[in-house]
Length: 118
Image (tube, rainbow, N blue to C red):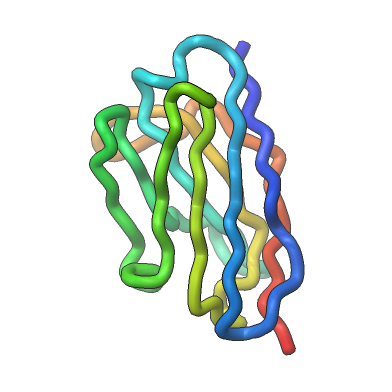
């Protein structure tokens, strides 16, 4: 059984930064791709960023140049560094572990709220 636990969400002013973390249990972390999705009220869940088992990354156009996804396989943890935050980044952010092309999340965290507001 794989468990994913997110942390690091909160309230931040526009232009500010947050770093989300996702800790995974189990021994399969290193061989799977990881991703961050988000869902804003009234909207569908959307992919924010992906990182493969070898560190290849992919980002949604809306966050390119502002967000950075990274992983520490020794700690079974994936991160999402979010800079220059905008009100439209407000959403619940979910961590996922999975694979395939296109990527499919097999395991999901409970989500962490990010609110960007002055």
